[in-house]
Amino acid sequence: MESEAETSRRMPIADVGHPVLVIEDNELNRAVAGRQLGRLGLSHAFAEDGRDGLERAMKEPYAAILTDLSMPVMDGFEFAAKFREWENSAAAAGRERTPVIAVTANVTPDDMARCKEVGMDDFMSKPVTLKRLRETLTKWLAVNPGDTPSLSGPAPFRHEQDNRETSPLPQLAPQSFSALRVIVVEDNETNGMIIRRMLRQLNCAAIDSAADGDQALTTILTAPHGYDLIISDYQMPGMNGLQLLKAVRVGAPGINRDIGFIMLTGFADNFIVGAAFKLDVDSFIVKPVTPRALRARIVHVMTTANRIKRPMDYSEISIDPDEIARPRAPREMKFAAPPWEAEDIDGAGIVERDLSSVRPGSKLARDLYTEAGDLLLPHGQTLDERTLDRLRNISELDASVSRLMVREAAR
Image (cartoon, rainbow, N blue to C red; front, side, top):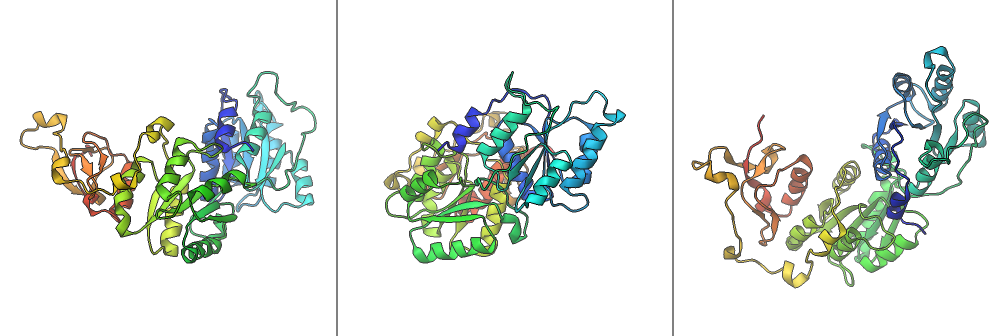
């Protein structure tokens, strides 16, 4: 079975000239669609309903349009009918025909027939797999010379049964999580049961479980669908949470390296913070897990892009328990002077700030260490919004990152 990572690599990412328009009323469905298109190297734009999509599609050309069917204001059927009517008018003279692809769930044969009647070209069942998305867009975007499908005749409308994998999440409504596929890695049966129950209350599409990292990797590789998110405990027999995170980021065969990863931990395990941060964990949740914290972390992780580094960068990170749990003596912590301090002898421009008040774009003026003495960030690093957000999450476990010495960004 082809992994998502392999799917992304095999996408013919020729410049198709225009972005893909996604018409979807659910905020997190839009976010996940954007994430998938980004993996395929395709630029994209969003519209929140059919009317918004129609206005955008009439103003500028798009390589393809992916539209939900059930939306407020104007649904996908009405959008497609009006867009095709406009395309056939003099107002659209010179504009090439745009492929319109329905993306929805629980569609009936009557709905499929109606899609064809209003001029849609293809159909994808939610949740949409990355493989299915790639295949469909490859067919309609003409990314390979000579592979352009004919758009002049009847569209080869095709229905995919139930090919599941990656997809949406939402704001607050539990039904909005209806395409999220999660694997919970937890050796404590009671804890795992509680988390799975919370996920069921969010109406997630798939909730699978594993007792340790090895079992999780096997489950991910053999499941008939892909996963959007791993929620893993740290302390487990066999392969622990850090080892699992490293295996994912380094590139375990058949597993998508940028899959969302939330680490469950307790205050007693705060020594893992540094290693997990370097391995680009997406978020932490301190036990005991609450429904509010779980939902908030999931929404944040699935709507925030994780900038994954090269596999070799992760392979060099030590996760040896004896090493990362060893307290560093103060003398081992080297606080190098920032290069600009020679100019700012009186410390002008360098201030100590509470983490919550540090402005994005500020530069770290001192090496930042965890309480265990593990270097999190070197001095001189620019603190963007994503880095600050990750530090805020870590500060719940490690108070040493709650205040920073920074050279502030200009207002």
